[in-house]
Image (cartoon, rainbow, N blue to C red):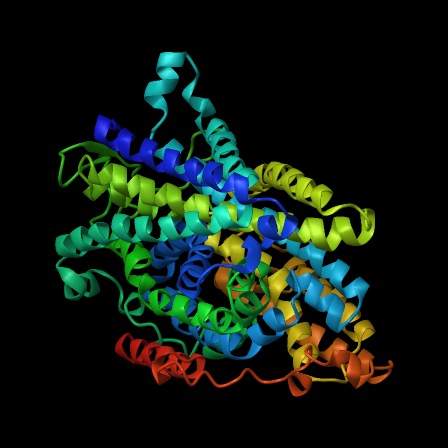
Length: 599
């Protein structure tokens, strides 16, 4: 691909602006609270956009488009039942606990509610998860640069082999994110996330418009795809009659309840944005404000994937509709989705049945190449790069906070000065990014990064949500029950993953490493059931052990358990639709309508 001067200029301006924000904010980073919590001084609407953008990493843009191509409109379940209800719940019921307790992180809330060992377990598992999530964004960005041959020209000029593109891209993306977080901390990440939100909308809206126009609108798209790809609920009566390979119970319990609530209610990456708000009211409205654009994002990220798979079967080459530029495709693919290529041999990768494995992660990059002319291509690429930066920065800022407060300060150096913890936060940023580079290479084993990400969530967030649910709504839940429940839930996830395998997969990172008890129709179905097992085991073990161990005194749980927490004062100064309850009702009503329209 030959980028023109205007394409390069757009990208250079973006990166200069991103780094400039970090440089401008450096002088305000005087304490650890400034660096990790943005001084708790950010308005609600900025926190709301950052809350959404922190989730707009590579998994959202590349992963959801990949899932759109692989599973069709059923991918919208990740939004309308897999996000919106949980975002309303966290705004109405959970934010008062987080913000009111003045905890600096989710693990710290667990220490206040339970004990040190529960906090320690969660801090380690969460830090591990952020490293994997950041690595996935890194992998997706390097893959994009490689497939678009962005560096071919500069590499040729420098005499560097193009085979180094993937590795150089990973290191380069790591250095840019490191620079602006190292300088500006969470504040820098939040303001960059707001910028990235608008860039993503500006970059992908034209892509959807051009793609839909090309295939004859929504009606034309429906005619070119199987019926199951254009209905979100039809065929959910059986795992064998829908692309997701999961039945209604698995979908509602696995995604709609365990994974969804587990992620939005307990993932410190997104909760941290709301906790940076300037008041309790702003903190509660943060996830509700974020839910409004979240509902319409399937248009921007799922539709392009569906269009990519609906286009005519591949020939050896296709032509950019706007520029006439020739794009080479391999013949084993479908639509604009090529077969996944083995990096070592250059040959298409095959599944256990000998069929080519489609590389769904390339849906968005190939759509950009297919439809965008010069200039617009630069904007689209910048939007894509912005999403990767957003995903990496969000996870790295969460990692450096949890590492510094919940691991280093709690177990390694308890009596250091605030200046020392500020220094440690910056060091954590460096080694967190270094670990993410290793995780990026693990992500190369999956053909849909959303599958990989949901597997990570099933191990970490699913059991944690059971712990939170019992801890926040039951005074009887004890620290011993929470700790051993979490341990048992995570172990159950590992056992389930080790004894099951998705259809067509071979034993290894995708499961089956302990034997074979059951085969699922898809990776996503396996992930949903891994989450269900983890949540149920954690829930049951926590109750059983709490029943035989001594609970804490009620006076120690004030502000930490729902029944012992003062309810937020009614916000009479706000109109009904701007109050958390009214805003939540509106959001849920619109989500219900969207489910009915795309039934």
